[in-house]
Length: 301
Image (cartoon, rainbow, N blue to C red):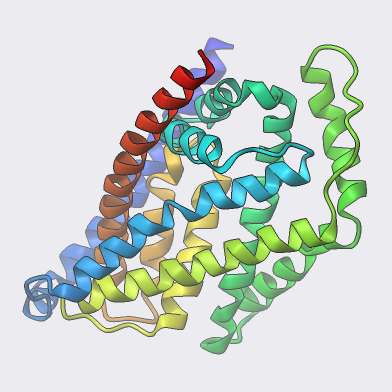
């Protein structure tokens, strides 16, 4: 078991190093031309930072919807506090800390329900990212973009029968808990579609935020490009579970996907700025969430 864990950690480190090597190479090869373009950050840049910070409020709201589909009605105050506090667990490789932390903080609603919500979150996140990434077709109708569109359409399969999928998801999760898990099926098309549309709106929000960040330093990139490229890069990083918060994979993918659609080096700059601003926003959300969770604990006592 220890050997497998070590191998997984070494693989994660290798992926991060290789991915950031692509980013560094892209920056190095185009730095002279970019240095003339980049100006001191304007108000637009700080507006982009503020928008990314505000995006931290979207994900807990989506989790509330997903939890409702899992049969648990969670108060907004509790959901925001738990999500913001546990979110930093994603920076530990494997996502185990993230899942275990959130399951423990939300144990009042049942660890099995929280585990199920993670399964739905994974499915919905990948599906929404593929849908937003399908905008890539507006720029290049190649076999790769067609594959992305096809994958996005396949990812909508849960809409056919979300209650059936819920029954399937609950079978392996039930084995992890104690006793029989016979909670009634609660996921329906309306709830699933609501969460999906909220996530798609989130990718649009990220695209706008990134456009503001870039325009704030004198770089102009089409909004559609930013929406599609970032959502796909995020999905790649999210799917590689051994990486902490998709570190490296997201930046490498963003750099490579942006290469044919923007000036040289822009993808690398966006990848680094986006990660830095995101981490700061997550730390701020963590601090606020910790404060809220402390008051919730006192209220329960």
